[in-house]
Image 1 (spheres, rainbow, N blue to C red):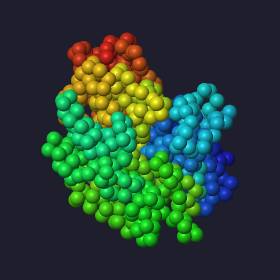
Image 2: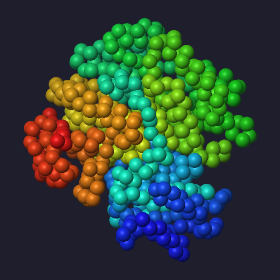
Image 3: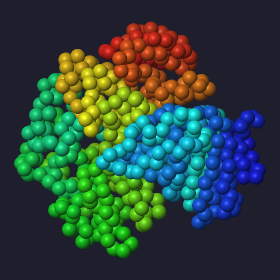
Image 4: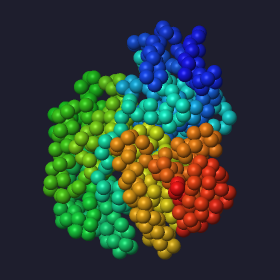
Length: 587
């Protein structure tokens, strides 16, 4: 591999063929470039703000370690205008909750930025300047415009900027090897999440009941799940089980005897978790204690840093304060001791809530500390954000999905999002709730519920909230059948999870993992591999009863029919009726 830099122009070539082209920012002086075992480290001068630009078109297709609201695949299909790379809840440019400053090309180059710096990133940004959306949790702009799909006006460049900018250029013979070159630098978990969290479905109250929950409804929900013979591991009591946001005690009006409720759920075979977040609203009983002890995020003038979140105005737990984390953890453990709760659904924690907080040079550090705290103290849990948390043996949940079909936060984005999270180094993907969240008048239908259950059945974990039996007998029967299929493959899922903990290899892999030079594989956005020997080709379009299937090289056998196929091949119009998930096993 040859690196050549002349007149600030950078060129990486292999056997005389250019595989990466860029231009270095030298306004504050030339960056220092150091040879490393798998490539080069680029460091810009101290205290200088720099922005390096790379040509996307020279390197084939690009795949990034970013969870996006509109999860297009490959990444150059989207136009992401330059903005701070911060973990986001419904971010204004389309960034979501789990991010890694990592980009991989089909030609075998990886760009990995140091994660302890505040970064700006633009990817194939719009030359025509798409609308600049404000961050607005109450009235978000359309999902399909954040990031916008490339309509031919993208600038074809990766813009990577920041103060004291530092990143690595890693090189390998192909994309999977380039990803593996990043692995020692980003790390990986060495254990897997508790078995109950992933082997059996999680049932959460949120999408079905929203905040209209109480002890009777939770028990009744559990009865319905059992009555319809669904497997169940965890029942998750979501918002709003406490009287005030920030307090860690059940609202006695809604939950008069939480211990009896949890005991009853345990007796029916459920583990029980509840929803918590790092916000404390001013009407919470614990607010005065948290404020007086310095446990809330403050500002330079001594005042508290105000935060607007989706349930009002409040303040953030100061996760950089060890005493604040100890207090938070002690309160959570006390709640477990008095109620019997098994664990928690840890929500929020994204850097975007810090806004312009002057005390946080790298806002993503809030996410990192929050998730590290969860991993160290509450392993029977899930989180929905991640920054430099690849070593955490936790379920990482996708952002709240819409009751929709597309890559714009719908069913198809479950697949592309799982692939992006895997490439970011988070193998234990928890897809969001089957059928979506039913926000803002959206409604799932029976077909969406069935196809969504089929997609999630062979991902690392699965969770429900909308009840399949509410959508008719056929929906109920076919969703239940998809869970039977999951049960048949649980040993394979478990093997892949242990492999991820041992080697760091992702559980869910893009099909190009087995087809290094085939552009058909690089463009495939509706299939995935489970390990290296199983390919899943779901239906993710409404009304579709057949689909084309791409198979990489090898001898494959379709699980339902037993048909043997030798790849690479594209199989046209493979029947996929509503009761069928296409699965192919490598012989």
